[in-house]
Amino acid sequence: MFEGLHLGLNPLLEFDLVKVPKIVEHDEEPDRIKFDDFKKFAYDLHFKKCLDSRIFVDEFVNSASVDSWNLWYRNILLKTINNAVPITTFNKFLNQSHQQKYLIPILKCPKPNPNKPASYAGEYLVDEFIAGERVLSVLSVTSKRILLFNEQGARIQNTNLSILSSMLPYLSNDVIIDGVFNGERYYAFDITLLEDFINNNQQHSQKTRHTVLCDMQDLLVELFDGKIRILPKKLITVTTGCEIESAKDEFRSQGATKCVIKDVNGVYSTKTKPNWFIEVL
Image (cartoon, rainbow, N blue to C red; front, side, top):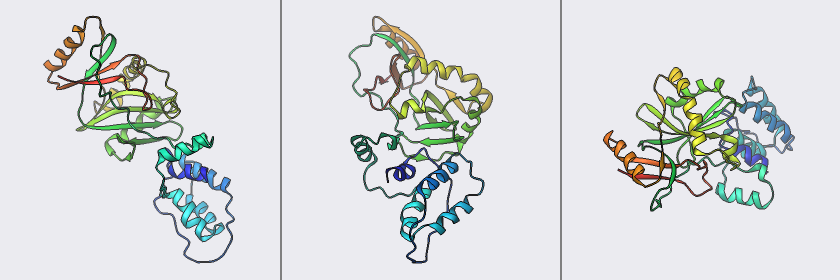
């Protein structure tokens, strides 16, 4: 059961099936589907290895009982599993049952810390706050897919960002790019490995991640002609506090109304205390 729920609820698994037939005859045939065969078919769909899904679907329909197909297997393929339990509660149960391999990834955006420090000290990255739609872009090399999520972790469609698929041949790992969609432009301001985010195993600092993004700048210009940009960051070392005010003055003079201040050692996670802040200019 856990494995079937994982297939049906995991937002990172896509099967690309819009229509899956129901069984309308009310017979009493026993269910002869082997779940391992069904699981292999589902993953072949996800990894785009299945040339003709209709043949396999028909075979499963002919091997299934009415209820098992209509209420279970069909809903898994259509991603319409009706799970009355919140994902967070389901994941908590899986953790308690030592079934972590079936955990459902939650692709929410890390939020800024609402409690600003009384003073800043050390190294920080400062950039302009861009208003718009926050979008997590999952670039999956393994499945050759671009999956988009909003700030709350729900799957969204944005045809303007489908162009990100052009980056896949240049990547060696599945990554998440965090950014803001404003007008016709997408401003990327963070990046992390998908595996690290899912497993909450963040080891790369904000400064390191920003360096990775900056290294991608020339490629983005070549591929997207300015439609996708790296949000520039200003690295400052705060010793007296005046450095922050000077940076804020610089952004204010450029017309910005807010800026974002990030600890260079901060990790990218929704499960740790946020170490970045929004300042009104």
